[in-house]
Length: 295
Image 1 (cartoon, rainbow, N blue to C red):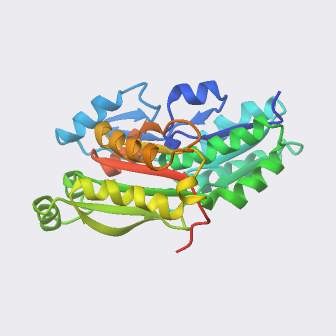
Image 2: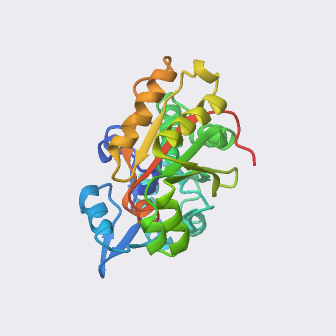
Image 3: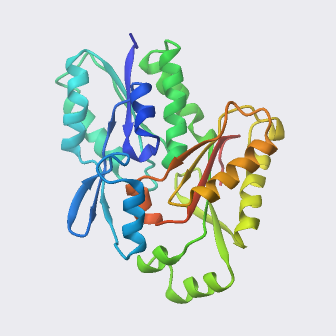
């Protein structure tokens, strides 16, 4: 039996089956689309295909984070079962869910004084956040206790690198994130913005690259420059995509060709409905372990 329960939020963007197999309970964010609220439950209530199809047809979903009451309801059954909790949260650079989890802990701790409730700001998102959860699950399975896992994760979380590009700027325009002029010029010039996540857990645009082929080469080049061991990298690699699997597959193929010592095949996941509400279709994200992120 594990020494603690590892939990996270749905925005870690790993497959539902993955969380079931690794015994990692998750708490769902929510999104609103066409006047209806849905849970971000990894494609169970609404398939990813349907979600992105509706966005392409003009839907503009909005999102809501997990609130304090939902965290209390989520945590308490494990505390009643005398389990310590290590909860990893979506980056504070993108969401206030970490703060909500901390408030829930303060409310629950007096009731369960002998239990540890350890909350971690992942400073990550999507399957990069998922990669940190995956590392924490390995620590749990190795027999580490809650404090040991917490300390290791805090020390190593900035080693997970997040690189993103987008080939479709239409959703950014509809959502007011870029101007109509910028979207039109970007489409005419085939501009694909390349972004990464800084050491504060915020997305930062790094380059504007013309054509999809070039941005795919560039994102893999960033992995060459930053991955532990360079071309000898032997860790895991995750990719997430928002309704552009063929682009994600092309990146994965190039990664597998470039890094022959990978720990298994590249895992390709879907960008979930909450993060996808902000990116829209056409985003590919690449995650790997490197040196500490600095900015």
